[in-house]
Image 1 (cartoon, rainbow, N blue to C red):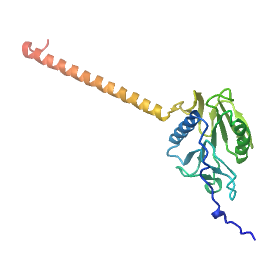
Image 2 (image 1 turned 120 degrees about the horizontal axis):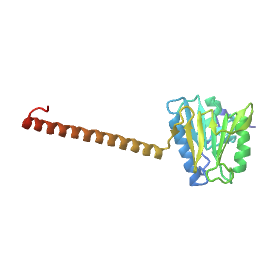
Image 3 (image 1 turned 120 degrees about the vertical axis):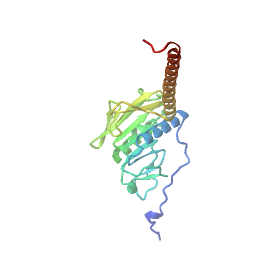
Image 4 (image 1 turned 60 degrees about the vertical axis):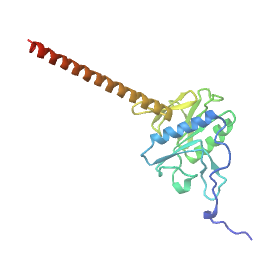
Length: 229
């Protein structure tokens, strides 16, 4: 006699013990993308998750995938141990896979077909080492129920233009062209801005000192020779 298992008793693991990525380049690219997009979407009803299980069929915990980075709109912000589509009521809007020669077939076939079937609006493949994607970056967008290549490197879902910058993806706003900065770049930009302000304040102080010295000189002149003609 078999006993039916309640769906509430089914365990959906949050980890499989596998490494997050094959190489340092892939790990760095994943976390840089995660950080950039989290900051970009801050204050909006959205979340960005990296290397976490996406469960897409209730009651079947083996039917899962762990996208390198996924962006989901219209859900509560913040992290999750895993993501269950039937609980959140939203499919990821954009998924990034940081591909390599070793994951090539899975990324361009198995995952492509899965994300297409789940109706993920955009699917981006980035090859940090340029092992099999010549231009390193290739995106796909749903047209009807089929993925078509994105030819302009623009994510309509994110409203960002994507650019290959060495082993990272650069992100630029479509509305004003502004680049979204990674943490190191943010620090560098902050230092640059701080230095500019210090230089401006120093120059203003020097000008105040010169004006004060000139006023003191004129005052001494008046004391000796009277007012200027």
